[in-house]
Length: 226
Image (spheres, rainbow, N blue to C red):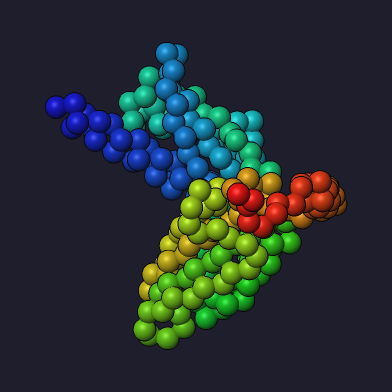
């Protein structure tokens, strides 16, 4: 019975997140987190456009709070806005931006849209980025297209710091899947070695110490006297 309750609880959380994203609009929300406290539920919305969500005088956010309270039967929901300073490093924002551009300009311009978004991410200072598009591009048969630049770890512990997201674009020929991966600057990469002056000096000192040890070490004579 407990397992069913957990599944039902997670399903309600997922429905709430999807409703918030759909009500605000594609391309405006990156993540929706739900935190539970004794005083009520705290819903944190990560966005790069906080003004559009809050509205003039907080009208939109008050309206969304009342809707969530009635529709999902929340006791005391409290919405907080987490502003994304650098949207170029947020994979979900970039994926939604590509999907909206494909829906607006059509799938025939998918290469231009992808390359422009990739350059936008890299110019902002990202260490690496990758864009994958799958669908009827540009012919009638489905195909996978990949656009990548920079350094992007795909396996191991370093791959955990890569931000990944996906979105869908509803175009006239059909649905196009969009996947974006971004490695933001300052990400801790395990096993990353940077060669600088300090490291070179340390290597030279180690070499000199090794030479001195070899010179001091006494030479052993071959064979032994009986």
